[in-house]
Amino acid sequence: MYSDGGLPLQVRSGSPGYINLLDALNAWQLVRELREVTGLPAAASFKHVSPAGAAIGLPLSEALRRAYFVGDKDELSPLASAFARARGADRVCSYGDWLALSDQVDLSTARLLRREVSDGVIAPGFSAEAFDLLSAKKSGRYCVLQVDPGYDPPPMETRQVFGVTFEQRRNFVVPDASLLDNVVTRRRDLSETARRDMLIGLITLKYTQSNSVCLVADGQVIGNGAGQQSRIHCTRLASDKADTWHLRQHPRVLELRFRSGLDRVDRDNAIDQLLRQDLTAAEERVWRECFADVPRRLSADERRAWLDAVRGVTLASDAFIPFRDNVDRAHASGVEYIVQPGGAQRDPEVIAACDDYGMAMAFTGLRLFHH
Image (cartoon, rainbow, N blue to C red; front, side, top):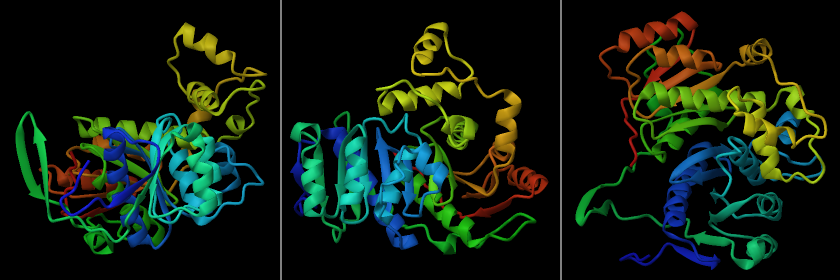
């Protein structure tokens, strides 16, 4: 690790590896831009150079506290709320993640972070109490990176693949409200909440391996479909993850009775398997052992009734949506707002699909591919 202008970060604890640093530097840029655009503390959970979750520091509902395993007595600072939301978007995928936090890490956030299985964290600073807590994680091997919040990289980036060096300009565009003015559907109203969630989606996609689509609700990513070759596969993946996020808040799921001593990751996996329809016989046997009382699975009608009540979700796409099937699938997951670059041959068909469902869609004219 080196930089011609000096390193913009300091290793405070642990020993980060190559992939750790890729995650850390991409995640830091994401939360810095969320902080800049929304004015609120932000957090991101990264795995394999894509965000599993990203969020800003809005208060958690009682259902989210329970779904994220945040205790009633846990006092949450805005940064801690952002962390809980980012880490709770997809708890199975966030296992062993790298975390980025936009503000100095306080004790409230460090206490939540210490409970989770994670490789490391990057932030602009740490309170003394927070650092003491985190530097003791993993018997002192937990990676803690402190980044210079004022650092701006040079305009050109280089990369070497197979002995060949590439160079291109960095993407300095920070998505803001000016990108949301071109609303192309009959429904033209974009609430302030929808505008905020559109920007969260766009900034998240800017640092997600392409192709990618993400769904956002209430200030946080709830499903990220990253790195798929087909746009519809991105949309299906993101929507399926969002459905799981919503179903985790179903009363039947919140009231599960796990067997004594079951750790957090096994609870996460058990909930994920509860909500799946395709377990093998071997998986089913292991799953049943997780509970004091083995629960009855939600029926297809119960799942659909819960998901049909979902409204106000935003879908963001890093490149144009080529076919209406993406809109059809998104509607089943409560999407009411879409933001995408536009420019496909079948834009009229995609717009007509949005009109069929009463959605509002904005064209940004900005592609956000990231590799």
